[in-house]
Amino acid sequence: MLNIAKGEPLSPLMIDAIHEERRTEAWQQLIDILLTWLSDPARLEDEGFDSPTASILRLSLDLAEKYRDAGLSAPNSVVPDPNGGIVFERQEGSTSEVLHVWDDGSVEYMRFLGTQLVERQPIRF
Amino acid sequence: MKELDPIADDEELFRRVSASAVPQQYDPVTDILSDQAFAPHKTMDASGISVYRKKFKSLEQAAVGRPGKSYFVAVLRAGDLRRHGISVVPRPNLPDGQFDAAHAELPDLNSATRKHDATIERQRLLANELCLRVEGPFPMPESDSA
Image (cartoon, rainbow over all chains, first blue to last red; front, side):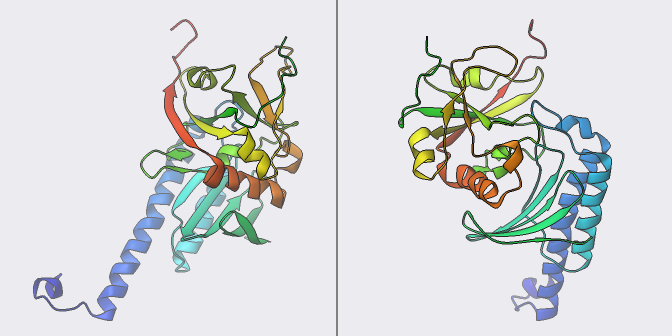
């Protein structure tokens, strides 16, 4: 802030600190969403739409905290799938990366170019 | 009787999208629709995910769901789906024995194929490229008598 006030460019260290703060905040927003769902999973239940179990939500929380702590960029979104799973997605341009926590507790990483699935692998967690 | 009335390429189709989750599967601000709006349920979509034909049902009728909930409606065109290899067929006879002339299904996206690469790619195609627009949300009254 002082550097901005003085009209001086930010140092690389300050830029890194700002990026890190924003990255952590973005992860925290997703974690807060998951915690809200965990407090009342039934709110997600709908016609043809199963709410995630507490264990799936806790697994998703563990995953989010692990990737946050590992320094990964935060996903842009988190949504439930209709079977009680959770889907994290990060999109940059035409590339999307997805972490899908399926209803059986398995986790997969998927990468898309546009709508084409170009990479898919299980995540051991 | 319209039981097997074929679906024309220029027919518009409605897909009901739950607005129960926060954040929702559709974000009206960014106009981003999640591909999970087209993900099959593991038991309830055995023969394909459901859509409704505009020819027989209004947007508001297509949005009718569980009392107290709220829904968006994604609008698609049959010919667009077919040009991308996604079938759409009339299924007016419902599993519960009811008849609904508006009911149709996308048989390629079904319970058995829900984890297949092709199904996952089709979900993204439907959400990101083939959806013409999303209408709503349409809130449902708390009960039928409301």
